[in-house]
Length: 98
Image (spheres, rainbow, N blue to C red):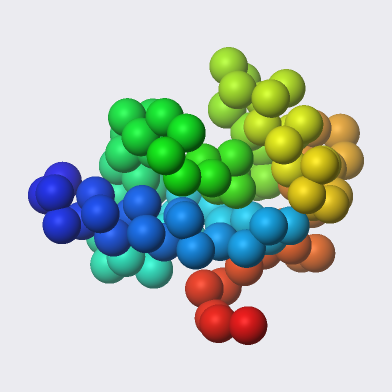
């Protein structure tokens, strides 16, 4: 991935409103790449620079090693989580303003 693409990924994730989520694939599509895994790699390197917890897997689940913390952060924002999965139909964000 290029530095410009990394910056677009981070800007996209930073723009996800509290209480909303995107999937790794959503972010990839939004920034114009075909690599959801690449999105994950960029977020892993970014630390807490952006609200990484607002990005989940396509099935609404969280990465195993971050699941407890990620679900805690999401629930604090009002994101519905049931049996370890975010209810995407209720809180998925499409990137549209407002």
